[in-house]
Image (cartoon, rainbow, N blue to C red; front, top):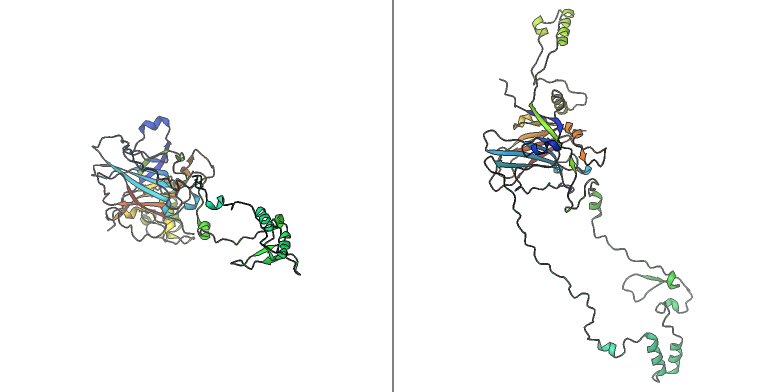
Length: 414
């Protein structure tokens, strides 16, 4: 017995959203790009940041998806990162679900003042350098005299003998190399001389002070160089300062929806070919069998495609039956077109209920995701397909503002 096929709805490109449509656009509008339209102004959701690079994500899709028998309005907002370093990676996409009771009236959001903690002044007296009048006693006793004055006083006293006085008279206190052994006559002459009193290996080069080359010991880097090499590069399209308003957005386009049609229309030309085949191959089975054409929508080519990827072949053939489709919608796990096997849909991170497939973003939407204002005419996102799995219970409480759902990004196998 054949199982019942899941009902799938497809999203197609409609006309661009212009100012004449602005009053008609709200949370119940299906659209590509633009800014998110939330049910009430109480929703304080800002564009989520990319988990990989931190840049603000842009709204890719807004889908109004109320559930049958539910009293809630229900809208899905799908955001993506435009940083090329993040493309085709799961953490660069975010899906947020927002719900609103039908009888709940629209209310404005009241601004709540936030108390700011008092600032603390660190090192408040750090710029006071002894101007408090308490002079040091050593300075009052003459310790601030220069070296030449002290030497003259010492030579004029009678406390030293004549030999020592002669040695002191030949001493130059302004000699830049006075403390270096190279200032004494040495058979070695000039060059680099080691310091005997240095706590570590060092050398001084004899010569004029302007010619002396100082070699500093290299310091150990304070950052992880490998992390710097692997750090993602911020996209120049968007400023990273969180205080700067984000003006970039994808071009806003309406979506129109219709149910997926997998029926195969048999043309008259195909019927004529079948009759011709019967005439030239009388050994074939009965004419009725020859004229019959299989219209089973679930029958696909059984042979393995040349590239060897059967899942991608099935994915491509299914999409080609309804050209132009950008998204697929169905709350049924069997409706997802996979590029790679998926073991399990998992469980809701909020209530623990089983997750269920709901939306698939197809790569056919990539040419529609144009940045505005246009900063780079060659900009184009890259990804295989994006699968959105939501809570099967669509859990929600009166205190919730939004719920984040699970996103799976799959890339075509190379």
